[in-house]
Amino acid sequence: LKYDPEVILDFCLFAIPAAIVGARLYYVVFQWDLYKDHPIDIVKIWEGGLAIYGGVIGGVITAIIFSKRRNLLFWDIVDICTPSLILGQAIGRWGNFFNQEAYGYQITNPKWQWFPAAVYIDANQQWHMATFFYESAWNFIVFFILLYMKRHRKFSGEIFALYLILYSCGRFVIEGLRMDSLYWGSFRVSQVLSGILILFGIIWIVVQRRKQRD
Image (cartoon, rainbow, N blue to C red; front, side, top):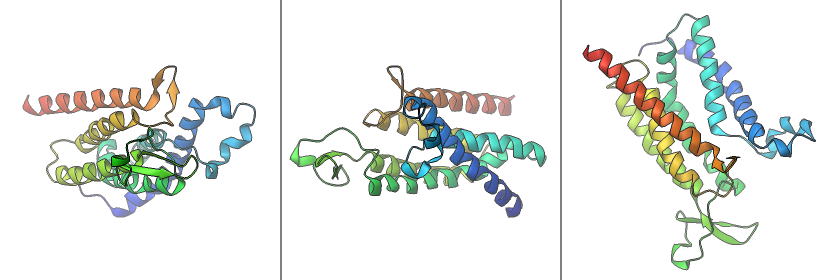
């Protein structure tokens, strides 16, 4: 993958703001009851309320538009940026540690009341599953896998598809442990979306590899 670094920088200048907007809108949509009477609060992102899947959607939409405007291959753009994306997610999860959020169910067994198995939450003075750390650790693993696979890419879009599969597998499991999930009826939104993205990633890889053999 050989692209002018200036092109990738230009893309990031558009993608980062779009990702923030997407992350906020995604959260607001599934928490509309909190904002319908005070819509001005939607812009108060400093009070919390960003969803990574919304950020990814915002970034992907930007990549589609950018690649068409610059006459570039969309799948190459997302393949280049995906390792940086998952690395940012891995580091960003530590913000949850400092904000004491995105934690899991309470841990009452003293044998497991230690970090990183659990995290002590000052607000309720209880130990909870350190789900933010679980996801951060998994994202670092995915990052190194993607770096390795980037050197052995078989087709355009493979790195992004692997990201969708690997990240979503971890998120599906970890989301089931969290206490602050966004819900769609009785379903956790992130688990539903994770399942869809896993299937999409697998189908995309299978289809592309069959094309290579034909």
